[in-house]
Image 1 (cartoon, one colour):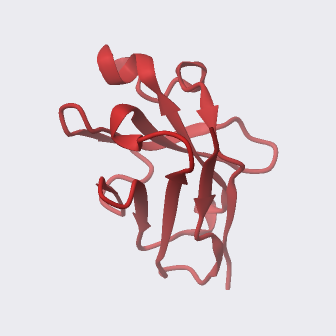
Image 2 (tube, rainbow, N blue to C red):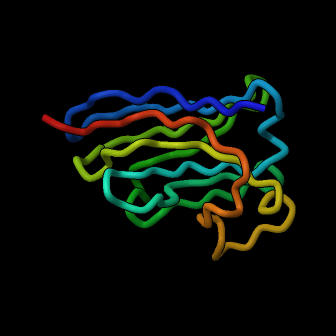
Length: 129
């Protein structure tokens, strides 16, 4: 099973990027999908997640109102639309799957990395002028 995150790049502050997450071996609509990011010298933090089972979506406070997560079940893709990007959004972005959160979502734990067992290799987003 492989997860693949893509779409990163260099963008100016205020710009937009769309990240994509897909899998070659699993149907993403049977897992909670989380987007995480890790900046140099910082801990990995949850950014957004979606549970296809009930449609629940969560965002971290740092990206709420600027990022939008969505899924395309037919293409087996999950997207993260990032608008109004800031330099502090610079990080490697990862998508990950959680089976336990898919069946037993706990809202206070949706961004707990240990509950996500499959991770993509990450895609670098750099926000700079």
